[in-house]
Image 1 (cartoon, helix red, strand yellow):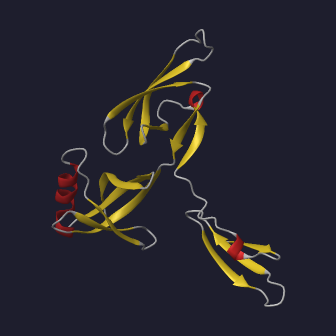
Image 2 (cartoon, one colour):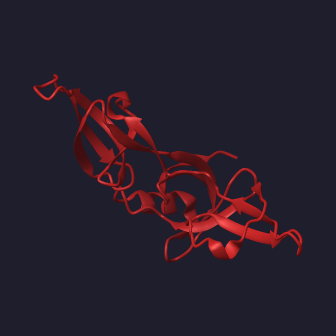
Image 3 (cartoon, helix red, strand yellow):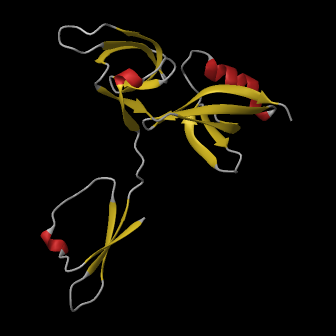
Length: 188
């Protein structure tokens, strides 16, 4: 949270709406119409800009608004228009679908912020909804068993064995999407 003091600010003169920012206004005094604005913004972005030439094999980039892991890069020579082109072969990190993109190496592209976290399975219901818990005791109940790749969800359910085994799953998160991508049996 940041606190901004604006003297002689008249709220009715402003007709600006900025999404993802919550603003609270409190009048400081009745006499001089000074206001205090308290604004908060997570400040977090789902992607960051990057030059195409800086992206490496094994790195991440956005292709057609999908977060992808780069499998290979080939760079063409500079042509008559002066820009070398980067040809990217990549795979969507959530669907496994292969995608390609060609971007001039000096031009910008977007890179998703990808996070992976470990969770323990507490419960799997009949609709494949999963209840998870992290090491700090925080619980999460907004994910389902994965459907991609085929069979991974069934493998996790079988390994969990109705709670007989302790199973740890890796949850990958990027651009507002979360998905279980792997699991392992934890030895007690």
